[in-house]
Image (cartoon, one colour):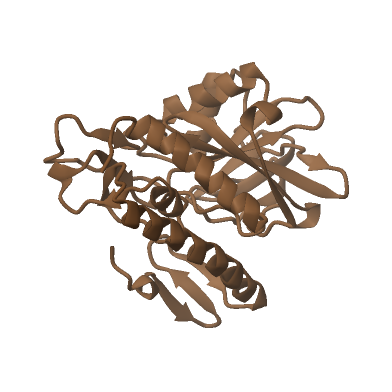
Amino acid sequence: MSKNWLSDFEYEDGAFLVKKTGHYVPANFSLFTDILAWMSFYTLAQGWRLWHFARGHRAPRIAFLPDEPRPWYFIWPVMHAAGALVEKDISKADVVFHFDDSTHSTCQATGAAPNAKFINFNCTDVSKSYVSDAFTKVAGYELSVDPKTYTGLMVEKSEINAAHDGRIVQGPIIPVEGKSYQRLVNNEVEGEMVQDLRTTIVAGEPTIVFRKRRPTKRRFANENAEVRMQFPQDCFSADELNLIRAFVREIGLDWGGVDVLRDAETGKIFIVDANKTDMGPPIALPLGQKLRSTRLMARKFAASYAPKIRG
């Protein structure tokens, strides 16, 4: 795997441009502290890698197409905790992973072994409109709204992946090209906070939930005041878990994360976003829970994709 990670970024006018997605990350003190927190976790994840190397344990060999994950993507520490290796030769890979940050993406696994397992090759669209339509189809109730006719508060946000540019607007309004419009889900909790239930997916199964809270006034920021790890069955009913499973099947998501909001007024859940190349574990999660959640994800990953493989 290439170590030239800095080539993914370009510094412009006080911010770092993420070349793959086109987003800008402000170069401020918050970014600096996030990097320090991430580095402590990265160092320990490297320890997993060395431990498995010493044991000669390999489960499984993974080919990534068209890109290989950098260390800040969740699959990276999970892969090392599971004792897996990146395989450059697709014909020798036990698992072939479609890894692409783009909102719309397709990929062909030409030359893969007949018994190889595939991840996310059916997940070709994670635009906000597609996510909303897929959710409505499986849930039976609406998330998206028509901004020209809807009277009330709406969330306007970019169609593209990982933009974090949402804002609340009052409808009806003339829609902006490239934006999607969803009903405003009241996910406020005590303490003037909003709560997201970031649910990780492994082999199409809800595996870990990160309960993320931030001040209501920073509802759409990618900065959390508090993050705690929980299990899906402690956050969702059996019917709700089936809804999440149906949703990820609908969009073809084998591995990734979905953002689930629970409406305080109706009690219903809404899946408002999906990410097939999610980063993690979240920076604000305590280090011990970072390690535990990664090990649990690795255990599920190995059981799903390499139950009989040993080095």
